[in-house]
Length: 386
Image 1 (cartoon, one colour):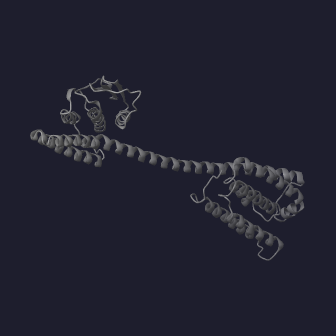
Image 2 (cartoon, helix red, strand yellow; image 1 turned 90 degrees about the vertical axis):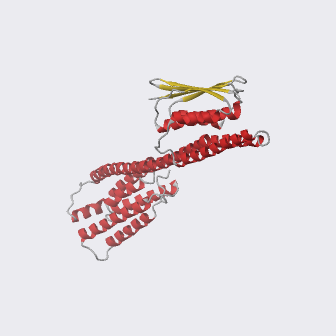
Image 3 (cartoon, helix red, strand yellow; image 1 turned 120 degrees about the vertical axis):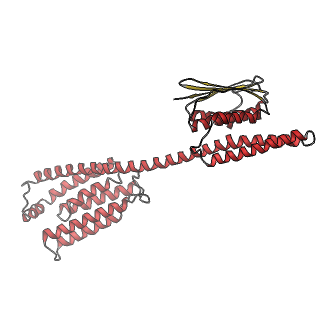
């Protein structure tokens, strides 16, 4: 598992800067304490150690395979522990290395590496016991007089500090993972919002502009048929087509303005809608509606507009009944026709019926369609007012 993608997250650079900074602190403390700038075996070993630290800092394998990271961690820990036991290393860099490997190995592999490194650390103390004691006495540091006590003390300190380092690194990792997850979720929400907006625009085009263009096409077709038969009716059809053209322009303006908070009279709009369809079939309307906010009013208008359009295009009806009412909690509307009907279980819901259902769901309501061949269709709409 790759905890970080170095092309996206600059963890490689962060780890390098921290490690090189700690190396600089180690070099500074080395010469402040020893006051020894002359060439010696000790200084040569320390210089080699510093060079290896720089090398390991440059080659942090965040994006490599698990085996590459495991080998890197083992060699890095071995070099750091060897330098620490021989007195040429630094406890700061030792525990930093534990933190560092926790960033690109999972917890089980980190514990496995730490276990073997602690055994190597204890073995190094035993083998280099005399040198450790001499170096400590020169610096005025008092250590346990037996190897066993020294190993027990150093291993206990090592285990305690290691646990702290692992917990610290896992805390940082958890925060980083949470940040990445939040970023991914934010992008997903943006994508979902974009998809919802596209669906909304599709509904607006289909329900408003699509209805007007369908009615316009019917009127122009009627005018063509009446061209030689009845000039007066032809002129009336052309006038109706002109009115529908204005309605198309109004629908386009509505879509472009993105439903801004402008006055919208639902009752008046429904009266206009009914007047537009009356030439196609007789409409008996009993409308009793409460005062609704802009968005629910427009959604309800689009639902009924789609219903009338479906009746005109498919039902071959002569009579249509529109009834509505409401109480304290709910609003209900029935749109019924005496057309040819259909079999709901056989005919899949078209885009129009699906749009009607989606609009009702957006307002927390639902639509129930009852129909059968040659017995018309009844569309029951129920919406909550709370």
